[in-house]
Image (cartoon, rainbow, N blue to C red; front, side):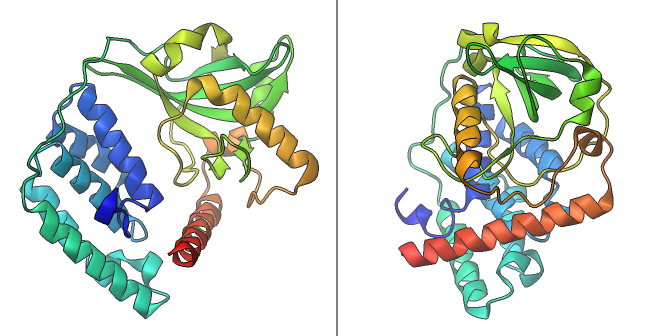
Length: 299
């Protein structure tokens, strides 16, 4: 990543959004449409913690693809204001360093990229599941994990499902009632496949799912409305690695205590309450500060 890695692309949220921009760009969406979709999804104008991280990801994506909007430039310039940098505000030195990095980034992206990325050709795949589907996914020869499809989208070239996993692992069959009583699955640090530290949910593209879609089956359907935000996580999951991730977590818990902040039941996820939102916002901040300290140590 070169110079971009310093403070910009090394940030998990910015990296995640850049990955989303690239994925959506390859699916045929215009960069303006992508920006509108991500702005609607992440709501940066109400996010005083991650405003600058969200807009750097969008701006970097548009610059890489050769179509940086003036609208986006204005937003990224605004991100240097202290009110949008509350994650950095506890340490004035860190705050000033962040502002300096952002300013260099702003200066750089206003020079058009010489060789913008070209769209990659993708075979058309439609979303395998619909919003509200409750599914089982095989994780090994005799165990399945229950999960909830919270969204489905079909783009020009690809479909995708947003899936939230529960901690209900079963052998032959289960019921909607049992799933609603379970908790949202949590993945801790550890293991070769660990790219999460948080509640297990992700967007899975249909083309990523297609080779092993036979491992999933529909259990039933529920009504999906407003949902509890589970914090910043990895946006794109890898369907073939689901079993590995679950096995790693099971083995991790045998010898370690989870750092999970709270249990979140499926019912709580589907009927969000403000006090839970606040706890998870503080957890996000804690993880961010820890990752910041780790990067300081490495550098």
